[in-house]
Amino acid sequence: MTNIKLIIEYDGTNYVGWQRQKNGVSIQEQIEKAINKVTGEKVHLIGSGRTDKGVHAKGQVANFITRSTIPPSRFKLALNNNLPEDIVILNSEKVSDDFHSRYDAIGKRYKYLIYNNPIRGALYRNFAYQVPYHLDYKEMEMAMSFFIGTHDFMSFMVSKNNVRTTTKTITQTSLNKKGNIIFFTIEGDGFLHNMVRIIVGTLVDIGRGKIKGTSIPHIISLKNRKFAGPTAPPQGLYLEKVYY
Amino acid sequence: MTNIKLIIEYDGTNYVGWQRQKNGVSIQEQIEKAINKVTGEKVHLIGSGRTDKGVHAKGQVANFITRSTIPPSRFKLALNNNLPEDIVILNSEKVSDDFHSRYDAIGKRYKYLIYNNPIRGALYRNFAYQVPYHLDYKEMEMAMSFFIGTHDFMSFMVSKNNVRTTTKTITQTSLNKKGNIIFFTIEGDGFLHNMVRIIVGTLVDIGRGKIKGTSIPHIISLKNRKFAGPTAPPQGLYLEKVYY
Image (cartoon, rainbow over all chains, first blue to last red; front, side, top):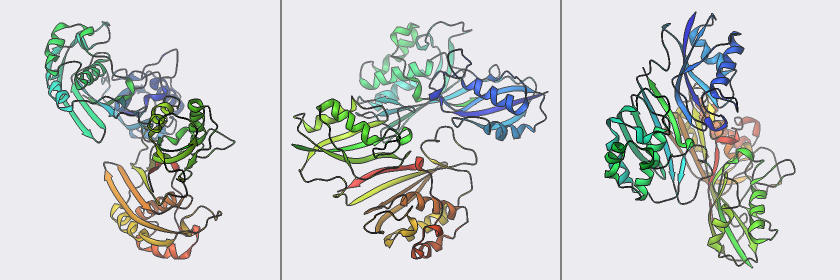
């Protein structure tokens, strides 16, 4: 038995998300099907975490157990030959038997793209959040720093799922601008459901002047979803890297 | 009667190209339909030139004659409200009665994106040419300069259509690299059918070492399509700007 770790890039536009679902095709399902074609086995692919419908990945991680004797590094090519164009295996390697993509993840980095232009863009519609309003970039940058550190992020969570803890540590954030594209990155030890998208939605409200940048600590302290900004749409979000 | 000039951005992925065709939906048709919804008129939209299936535009230009009293600058918003997400009017304005998008164009700028990576990318499949081979960037850059000037570009044309002349003047080219994306731009007074894509295909062959960079003047002088490289695929090509 070999435990194979995959690094995966995907365009989430045409999928219901990472996780297998009854109502549509998932990325997990596509990769499991490709593994089945290559090995003849029905495997369960363990992802580092779910990504929602429309969310992209440049470095999702997943692992599966196989009896196949295919050299671990060859899975990359073999699976890519059996995957649709919008899912790509960037790397495949053998890992220790007890490696678990989800339980062993110690951190993640996400990127979020905002297309800030008075007119929507035809080329970015599936790959960025189109914000037509003027955004106060300096105010957003200032506000961002308040997320750094260990906080209870209950205000930035979609709903109270069965989560062990709502306390997470954000280690790094950055905001960059190139033309009318704003690149936001955030890194931390873990993220609650929709957390990055609610943070971005809040930052956009700050950029528009609807929320003051200095109010972030207060919003965090209220531990109530309704005080944060709206949930930014999925198509701007990219899971960039999972740390182990 | 008012002559309205439009500047248009589009994602060509889902269209048969700019020009109306029997076998599928064209960009021209979509915009003519939107004009019909807004004005009630059946207009003929004149484009600066065709773009092929899968080719994108960031600055296509087109004009049409209308009896409508809608203020010219309002057409932008009115048409965008009636267009699919992958076509956007960036600007609308009144121009002189005799303005003609195609006949009056004095130059064009195209951009071409190459995704140069051993593994295909899931996110660029419709927006760049995926080249897995190592490319000698310096050789490509050197070769590029030979296109500058006035030449008979018969070697870089898909077929001898009914063209007035195959002599064109290239005024500018550039090659830039960011990570594994190579950006090629080319500007000139006009381009033959598939000319940019054949130039790019030839540059890629030069980058791969299949053709010598210094052989460009000779290839041009042969005036024969078979001596140039292959036609690069459409999805890397963007019509950036039309000059008047």
